[in-house]
Length: 247
Image 1 (cartoon, rainbow, N blue to C red):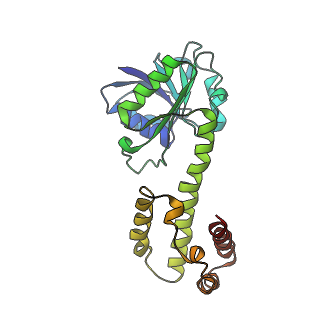
Image 2 (cartoon, one colour):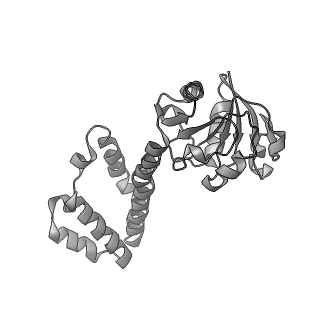
Image 3 (tube, rainbow, N blue to C red):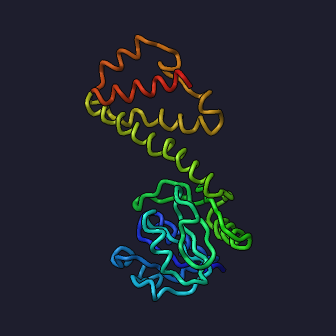
């Protein structure tokens, strides 16, 4: 059994706590948050604290906290501790603990009110020492079938790619929803198209899957679309259209 202490109260900390608490191969020794009210919902299942000096001993200390807080909080942890963070964009070297360092990065968009099937969540692991890397792989394999050894440089680039395929795509959904609202069309009409697009690129290269007026260089349709958009939407439409055509 692997013992863990989880530090943080955000979405990643919340979901890791839940999945680990429901697995007999992991022992969640303690939860830490600067605001103890944010982790009180777990109080009946695990020890909680807002005092770093009172942290329990564990095999792994998981910092599921904001990127800006990683260096400071890690510097307060026991010198012998094996400490990892869960950030996609921060180097392992940002950790300032005296002991061994690592990364345990679940690559997914987490919201507290949305259940996550961890079996499908890729977890990227990195560590200074091989035996700790194997420990992280073992921990990850307990909750998912998708575990990858990814170093800090690769993870940083992967995080940029994730912003494009998740955050930026979601913003496109927001614009599409706004357009539908403007013209009193239910956004749910687009749901099957969204699902098909996401499913298609799991089987063929995204570039090969590209369709639409930009791909066909259908100037009349492109102009009609531009006429229906506000100025900011037109700028985004033109930029993406040119990117598709030059890609």
